Length: 244
Image 1 (cartoon, rainbow, N blue to C red):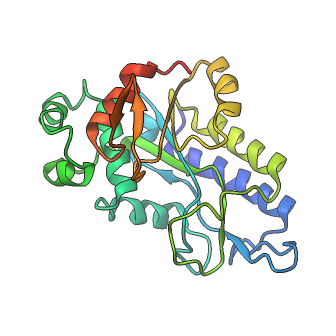
Image 2 (tube, rainbow, N blue to C red):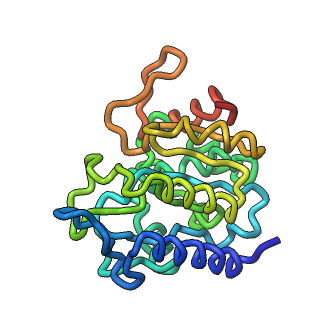
């Protein structure tokens, strides 16, 4: 079994190869070969929970783009870890936390039952009394790796475009190979289904859901559900069973 340090070392080597291929400055993250008037940077290493390497069920959340430029350079594993665990009040992280609890409900039975009793409340509200350390069991990456340099406005899909699709898609698959998750939870449906069959063929469970900050809701089995609630995570798991 790989240790956390071994996983980080393999991911670092993978990303360094990608930086060379794309001509990305490994300190600033800036894409040096960008077309004229395109000012984007590679923002961060993935989030890797401290207990991910030993987790009996390995869960990888695949989010959209990062949304805004959070650092002067490329966030290290340690910096990314701090950025995630210190921000439980964001809709994204609260939703990730709740989905993790739902997937690991046998391990967190009492806590999940408490949340289940309040499943129509917002994820942000229900996790206020939850234990620390839940996200230490998971990994989180972004499917779109670039962010507009100095971007502050988090919403919108302007950065959900591939700069070199073949290279970026292959990078994602190699991330999956290194992280070797049992479950992959896509946070956002755009461009996902082209991944699902290949990942399922590898023996992995795949869940596809709207992003946990989605304000418009989703329809599951004819029922309109708020994506920002535990009920949504529960229904995604019950309705999909990991088989897309």
